[in-house]
Image (cartoon, rainbow, N blue to C red):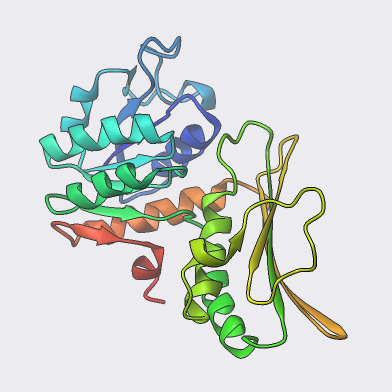
Length: 263
């Protein structure tokens, strides 16, 4: 399968490039960066000391050489890439977070023409955690307060993380609620006592934290914690490759990692 990588000069992009180069059933055919990036013209494998023959480019026409794009960039970049993917008939794995409603609608519209896996987190372990949260929330739907904590590196620009939001949504869904109706995004000053049935969020940004997520179910006399900690971006890369392979059998449609893993 011919793969294109967006954000090729970034940490996640380089991790994805390395994973594709090491996969016997995948071939790197395009590496994209933002317009004017100093990485343009470099070999995509230069950071590994490898000559791949694929030059990093900011020309979206390079997508025509690929069957699937893997994109972990930013919403504005991803949407531009998605438009080109639709034009060239290229499938898309989207790990970018922070989309607004209009952006999500654009992804949904594109899925009518191409196959897309769109997920807040490509990690297999995180997606298993989502399922554990659904089970726990159904059983702990009375007498327990739910809180979502997440921590990421200082350069992450959206908060709460897409994964934290998805964890909150898993709990809210199990409670037959809409997350936006019961979420407490911040607390400051005299907040009063905690309201029953709400889901609180707290965020840390600092250093080089790859990604920590914990959901607390706090009851009387006990506390249950369901935690996922990422120690390497390799887990996201490997999950993304699984998603790309899944799309090989799809012509169009919008899927997530729950579909990929058949959870």
